[in-house]
Image (cartoon, rainbow, N blue to C red; front, top):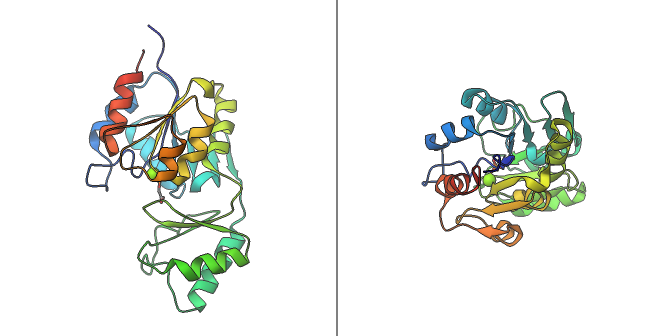
Length: 226
Ligand SMILES: O=C(O)COP(=O)(O)O
Ligand SMILES: [Mg+2]
């Protein structure tokens, strides 16, 4: 019997309940009991994956903001500058649009590098303004992210693997969207859940039959101490 492989897990679409929202509580125990490093790699702001690690009870190894923020457990790295993303949203507002998260906007409140916009908001003008600032807009199925094209989840995962000292070639990842393509390119084996978008499915080594946490739980069962 071999050891558990290091894991890289996306959050939304991957650890979520079959209805698409909220963490499926069945993932907590297998993640907590996993006998190898577990990295959470997400598009969400830094506090969200840190809190998830904290409440699951695992070390904080986190890629947030699609690679814009990386926490190796020792150091936090900010790999993109938030000024341009903020300027894009300012201009989007000035043109009469809104990020769409309400006045207190807890989605962007703690963001350091990129900005997220609600999927119900018009994306055409957002893409145009972002392009003027040299930024891209990606649609994860959960939000539009206005971001620097350079940093990505895969780079952040590599930085964490170097620091913690595990072999990414042996690592297993599960994800669901375009922001997981770089993750799949960085690890030995990438699995896309059945609800994944075409970009994630195309980059994965295997597309699962099960959706959301059902898919992830099936992978964990399969790769555990194979
Ligand atoms: O923040 C999003 O839009 C998606 O988050 P995720 O990367 O954890 O799926
Ligand atoms: Mg996702």
